[in-house]
Structures are given as C-alpha cells and as structure tokens.
Image (tube, rainbow, N blue to C red; front, side, top):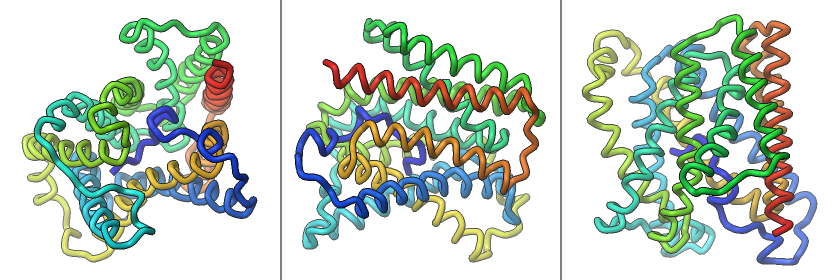
Length: 333
C-alpha cells in the first residue's frame, strides 16, 4: 500500500525531460482524471472504514497491515505478468535481497510510521481538517532539509511555509470536532512524510534509482515490521471480541478495494508525471486537496466554522504556492 502520495523528486523525471513528443490532450485529460479519482478514493474509502460506514472498524494498525499485504500480492502478480506481457512491464520482477533490505530498513521504519499515523489521523479528524494537518509536511521538510542535509531554503519558500503554518494554527483553533490524538497523529504523519521524502533520495541508490524496486522492499519489510505491532497493540483481541461482521463479504470487499486504491496511487502518479510534468503533478495535488475538502463537507456533512474555513483556505494556498516556488527553483538550476 502507498496511500500517501510521495514527493515528485522520488519519482522518475518528467516526460518533458526524457521525451520531447507532445501527448494527445485527451490522454493527458484521462491521466489527470485517473489521478484525481484514485487519490480521492483512498482518503474517502479509508474514512468510511474507520468511522463512517456500516462496517465501523477503528483499527488503523491492522488496516494498514492488511493494505500492505494486498499491495504485496499485487506486486507479486504484476511482476509475474510482466515477464510475459509487455503491458505489465512497468513493475520489475519481485526481488528481496537481504543486504539491500538492511540498507532499506531505516527508510521502511519511516514509511510504516507515515502510513500508520496517517490512518490514525484520518480516524480521529474530519476529512476537511485532514488536509490541513497533512500540509505541515512542508514545514517539516524545510526543517529537516536544513538540519539533516544542511541546505537552506529561499525566503519565498519560507513565506509559503509561514502561510501553511498559520493555516494549521487557525484551522486547529476553529475546528469544531477538535481531537488531540488526531492532531498529534497528523503532525507526526507530516513529520514522517518529510523524513521519508528526504531519505528516499539516499536509499534509491541501493536499488539503482528504481522506485518500484524500492516499493518491493518497503512493502515486504513493512509487513514484517507491522505484524508484531498489530499483535502487541491489542487490536487483534479487540477485533475478535468486538467486530461481528468479520464473516461478511461486504466488509472484506471494502477493505480490498481500499487497499487496491492505495496501491493504484503509485500508478496514477507515475502516469501523471510521465504524460504531463512535475509542475502539473504538484498543481493537480493542490487542486485535488481543494476538491477533497469541498466533497468532504458535502458528503460527510462536516461542520466548518469561520476560523476553520479560513485555516483550510490558508493551508491550501500556502501548499500550492510552495509547490510552485519549489518547481520554479528546480527549473532555474
């Protein structure tokens, strides 16, 4: 599973840097539309599982582990089909080398924490506030870039970061259904998103800069790492005692569809960057966040106060501006 979207610099270079041919407009339209549908589906389906469906299942560690298991199954099937069918050649054959796994393990810890805290945040907060909490990854990215890599950030990017932080503070203060566990999970998830983006650059060399090979190791190691956490967290015993619908097809169908959607985000982002550009990808991400907030307010009837609404708008504006500034800085180098 990878239901958190990775930063652009962890994915292949934009098509414009590799292939000067223009792609048909209708292809670009459907690729961007596919990204919108899949990335929105991940958030809303997870929210349905945790708190809003007839199958109320508030066990984020188990859900994360199950989605990773499904993702590994997809990787195994896809890579096997790729041996004989060129249309499946996007993902290389599955591999697991112990020496490489040791080098990837620190990154996997960040990956697991990122996914688990993200699902925990989604369990406790409204979807309208979820994007505000997640936007703090920009703030942490600037902090970790300086403390870990020793790289400074431009004043314009810092200004965008300030807008995001103000949005978070104002949005938190105005949140009607405020949750401390949800806020701490959102902040923690944002921190690990930023750490993950930074350490991916260092770890990709272990897999010849192939993000799909890295996904093989991350997914496998994450399953192994999460299994004891699920066991000792007490979630399994609570599931056995409290969940009456484990034998129902509808519940497992929802779980599998959500897991497949989470994995499909990887494909959607790959296609979007391949057929458009990194800038289009960042703009799509910001636009998707806006649509996500509006749909959440309509579907889940999340109450939004004036302060909360202002915070959401500021966080979205700051995120979009930061993406634009960073893209301009990268293209000017």
